[in-house]
Amino acid sequence: MTHSLEAAIVGAGPYGLSVAAHLRALGIPHRIFGRPMRTWTPMPRSLSLKSLGFATSIALPEGGGDFPGWLRERGLETLEPISYADFADYGLWVQKRHVPGLEPTDVARLEDLPEGGYQLTLESGERLRARQVVVAVGLGYFQRIPAELAPLGQELVSHTFGRYDFAPYAGREVAVIGAGQSALEAAVLLHEVGAHPTLVARTPPVFHGRTPARRSLLERIREPLTVLGAGRKHWVLEHLPWLVHYAPEERRVHLARTYLGPAGAWWLRDRFVDRVPVLAPARLLAAREERGEVVLRLSVDGGTASERRFAHVVCGSGFEHDVRRLPFLDAGLVGRLGLIRGRAPRLSRRFESTRAGLYFVGPISAYAFGPLFRFVCGTTYAAPTVARRLAARARLSPAGREVPAAAPERPGATA
Image (cartoon, rainbow, N blue to C red; front, top):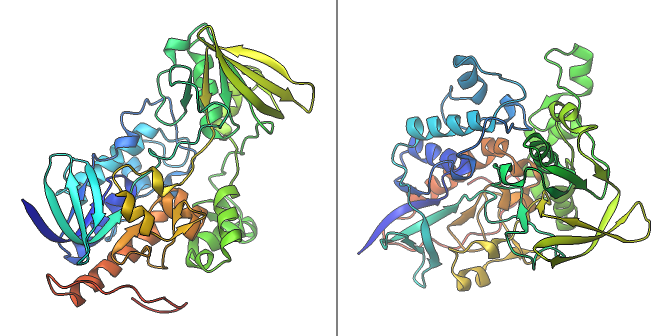
C-alpha cells in the first residue's frame, strides 16, 4: 500500500531532528525515518567532542533545549571536554521531547516520480509518496580510505569513524593514518589499551590551546568567540553563512575541504606527546598484505622509501561527501541531480537540489554552503531555512498537485 504525505525526512541525527522539530512547530505534516542518533550511540565516555558545548546545540524552534543548559542541569562540563556519550544522550532527549513521532526504521529506496514528488520504500516494505523530501544523513556513508589501502580487507584496514573498541590490538603494532582529532584520539586510545600505535601523517600533529572561560573586552573584539572558534572569519561564517553560497565554486569547495584543518584538542596533548611515536612528514607510497599483516611503504621527511609492518591500519583520513555513496538513492535520481565536482549536490540558497522538492542538509551540503555545515552548529541556519521553504511550498501546493520546478534565486530573494 502506498501512502501520501507532504514531507519526509531521511535521517534522525542532529540535522534531521532539527528540521523535524521546526516542521512540527510550523504545523507541517511530515514523517521522519531513521534510528535516532545512530552514529553517536553507543559511545564510550572516553571519547570527547572537539567542539565547545555552546557550539554543539541542536537548533530548536523555541527557547530552551540548548546543549550547555542540558549539561548544566545534570552537573556536567559545559565548555570542554564534553563526552560524546553526553551529546548522544542530549540528542535522544531532543528526539523524545521535540520529535516524538520519529519512526526508527530506515529508508531502503528513494526515487523521483514522473508526475512529480518522490516515492520512498521503507525497510519494512511500506511505500509512501512525499511531495518534498529532506535528506539529512550524517557521515556514516562517507568515510575516506586512502587509495593505497582501499583494496585491503576490513580485517586489516578500518576507519576511525565508528571504531571505539581497540582492546583486540593490545600488544600489537598498529599504524594510525592522519593528524586530525580522530586520528590523534585513536592513537591515544590504542596506547591506553596496551597497543603499540605509530602515527603516520603528512604533517606533524598540532594541538589547539585551551579555550579561556573569561576574556577581556579587547580580546573579544579582536577575536570574537564563535561556534567555529575565536576569530573574525569564524564570526562571518557563523553569522552570514549564506555569503559562502555565492562565492565562486572553486573557492567555496576549497574552503569547505581545508578550513579548520587537522589539529587535536588541548586535552589530548598530554596523553599523546612522548607516548605515541610519530612518522611525519610522511608519504604513503604503497601498501600490501603479507602473512596476515599490512606492509606500508613510506617516505619519511623526504627520505628514501622504507617498509614498516603492522597488524592493522586505522585511517583518520576524513570523509568524502559524495551523494553517489548513499545506497538508498535511486541511480536514475542521482543521474538527474546537478552535482558539484560530480559528487556533492548543487543546492539553492534554500538547500534545494536541482530536483524540485528534494533537499540536502548536513555535511553533504558543505560544498554548497561552506565548512559551518560540517558541524552540528550548522543546524541553526539550515533547519529553519529548509522548514520555512517546505512550509511555503506546502501552503502553495494543494494535495495531489505537482510542485513546480524551483526558479533560480537571486541574493536577497525570499521564499
